[in-house]
Image (cartoon, rainbow, N blue to C red; front, side, top):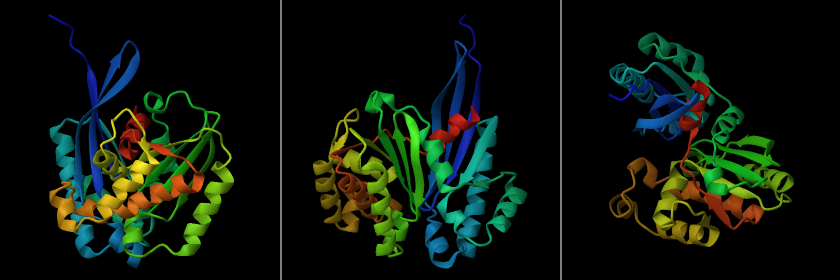
Length: 294
């Protein structure tokens, strides 16, 4: 009989502006090294950013749905016998005035401690993941994580973090006309000042929307998405009706209306920096949080 393999089960909860997610992972110790594999993921399309960015608070309806979601997460963690967990909130909760009251209520009713993190920490957690299988041994690369309320950019120069910044430009904000030209200009200026001159810079796109655009483009998983193909795919989606995006592309309702605004942010960065392709390794904040627990 083979020896039994011991493992821990962990959960990471990411409270985003467009959706909230819980990833359950298995962590094994093999030859003295800890290795994680995904067990399952639950995604709930709450779109907290719609309230947060316009009112700086959450409606009673959104708050109640969030509490119910946390209760469901708690039950799922109990059923899956999760040993430890981590819960982080990003742009939508950062933007509300009464976040401390909300965090206390979540803890009191579910026992889950939710921490609000900065855009900079969000970028750091996501960028710590190993993507060498995708981009090879390149010295200069840039992670771009477009969310509902913010875009995090972290630039690596000679393998080390060079510059990191979070911008209040996100797909939900764009959908609600919440980004003015001044913010776009600051974004463009920062990119040019800090990344334009880096040689052989590679861009890594993170987030559900870029993953969907990549899939729709038909690009092979191990290959980067070319800027020309990116633009063509984005135009194709933009020209489709909402019903066609739902039925023909099989997008979720909360993805169908924000995918084009999100895509325009990624394409804006490629165009600004003169980069001709983007790598899409299918990683996110919840994945990076697994490394934090380990």
